[in-house]
Amino acid sequence: MLVSSHLPRWLEVLLTEKFFNACVIHEDEKKNEKNIYCLDCCISICPHCLSIHNSHRLLQIRRYVYHDVIRLDDAANLVDCSYIQPYITNNAKVVFLNQRPQTRHRSSGNICSTCDRSLQDSYLFCSLSCKIDSLIRTEGGLSKFFFECKFLTLPEAGFDDGLITPDSVLEPIGSTRTSSGSGGYGDVECTTLACTATTKIARKKRSSLTAACRSISSSVPGISANLMSRRKKTPQRAPLH
Image 1: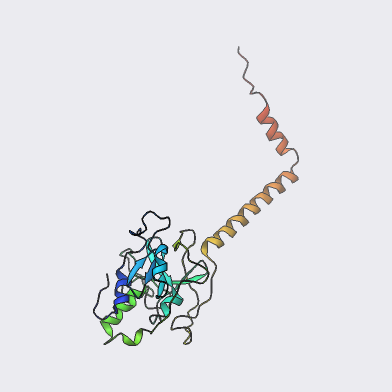
Image 2: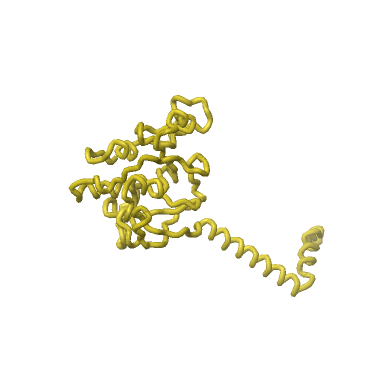
């Protein structure tokens, strides 16, 4: 866990908080997981707690296979996200809050400067905490990397449960262009999810196989009929001598 006196209180709590636990205050309510973070109170809350925090800065936490992610647009309003590798899922650009466990095998390609996780070229960090940890070790101060954000609210499209299913595969964003006018992170384009591409390939294979079977049946008339008649006939036994 990343804890440092260099960090503002809201970020220190954000990077160490346990999200998606049931809210004690609303334990009898449905969908009471604490997947919202209040930057003004430095606490995690559930959707039923929103009425008390309506005027506060709110950040929605999403989860992918037990790891917390936040929207890149939200993160870029608070801290410089340059060189953090973004991912895309459900048409949303996200970054991981903390580094993830990985095998001991060290990649020979581009890796995270903090945890050695494999990265695409031009990126230096795999998560927000990895960048913060690196800055604490290499920079004299962190104030220039934080932005003043007086207003932060939940997505206008409506609040969801924040869960990203394994079927919605997180894909690294392919473009590596950096835009100075986009909050300091890569100006990237949406890519097709791997699961969608796999589905299209599977459908194409099935349709090709079906067409091939129909072609064989039409070119050799009587095959299907013969096969069916063989199945319907009573099994013949050898005569007893």
